[in-house]
Image 1 (cartoon, rainbow over the protein chains, first blue to last red):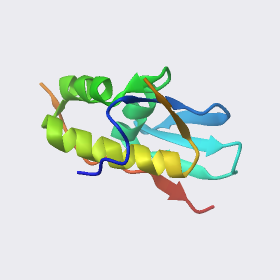
Image 2: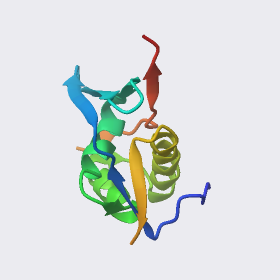
Image 3: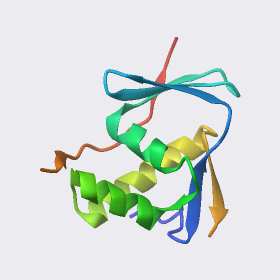
Length: 96
Length: 15
């Protein structure tokens, strides 16, 4: 499992993105870098979850109420997804 | 019933 993002940190959206729902998927334009993104359906739900700062455990617990997925698999894949968002400057991380 | 899980992925759209 990738541990570069700590379970003790909270994640939240960076402001300055135009977001729209399209065919059940969430698409986004970053005003900062001018890129267009598709977060997909589950990525869109994760994005909605971090409208306010939220920890990994809380995000995973929510997703487990909606999807048939183990805590381990969910944590690993959400971590990887958040790392992608972080690399693109779409989210910020703060210490809890 | 819970929905089917798929790995979340960020797709960068080349426009």
